[in-house]
Image (tube, rainbow, N blue to C red; front, side):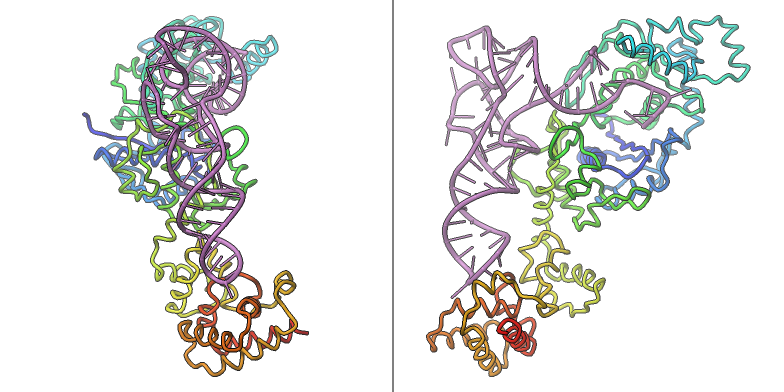
Length: 502
RNA sequence: GGUCCAUUCGUCUAGUGGUUAGGACGUCAGGUUUUCAUCCUGUUAACAGGGGUUCGAUUCCCCUAUGGACUACCA
């Protein structure tokens, strides 16, 4: 087998969609699995759609995901430059080669003329196709006399270079995921290869670069499948060896129809991009929402691919080891934000408490709380399993940091009895006598007291929790009072009695 | 409209010419937790439809339906 060289070739037209991240991921898995090279090539041949910051966003996204680029703009390599706008000088000669060979031609039709043609065909119920059937009637170097079109060229009249698609050829080709496909060239059009602004289109630049960069496998999104016949024709015209192709199915909306879009995320409250996008119309990112990169890529990797086993949690190395492109599914995968959360929950459970304490301390700092790291570690241990994100720890522990200001009315109605205030006052006097406030100490003392007095456990424990927490939630009550301490506990009981007891 | 592609529980999917069609997320129920959540156990639920081929099709073929992509001097 030849050397495996794959590329991820995004366009810097905005933030990188998670579908794009998945394409990058599969390319990366494939490269690493086969001791190959992963190349990042920026396809910025369309000046009009270029967006400032997008290129950096792409690189930062890959980095966050743990995808290591072997060759690229920052990494260098022997096949550069890796940005197509920096390769501008390369493409023209290949377009000329095609013209010399008779496989491409100059076309002088203006965009306005083509637009008119298209709308006229549309009105007649047809679709205008620039191909062998109409080529000779249009304004190009096929229909015009040589002296005529050369004169236009000399005068500097704007032109594009189009591929001369044969009018009736069956093109057979294979896709690793789709299998064998046959397309007749009669249904294809004379695609523009070289634009009037001096830049190549995707089709030309892509084929030339893949060849020059010795790409062995083209792994890209399904949206490229329809243009694969053209690409095959191009390889043939150049007499170049074909790489192998694999077209990945798309990511679909969680509900309804169609492919996943930013709107779905906005509507349903989940991110569609790996990182926060700060320019123009801003977009949420998985990183900022609190997802761990390894959970994120694990989730993404299993959307449209699976190893055939029942294992679901994979490290990057395990994914690389298990990956095979043949096991990528044929149909689009609907994105499920719930499952994404589940993955993060799993990864958070695997994390060490001291690590989580560090992460949570950053969160608290931003809110003005400064807590000892050891105490935080204890706190994490109490609530870890109930959360999926570090930021959720706060929702589970706010009452550790501040006494309740309100008390859940439902709980009061259900649990607060005539004698509750008296019982809690008695509880205060018991607690005051305990110096060691560990749960191991307070719990038996209080339980013994309840037992000896013949009280109802539920009646006491529920209101105890109510005055300490303010609601019917949270970890073991004795763990809570241990953490907040004797003084604070007694204070809260006293306050609760006076507020609720009226 | 045309071209190409796809179709197993609500979702991600495994799987085979003869299986009780398996797992995960979700849902629901029970248990644990004297709270809530977690957790555990169980439940739920699928081969798009119609024709073939075959002793037998979810599996192979055809048609239909549905969905998707593409149909630019965008990628």
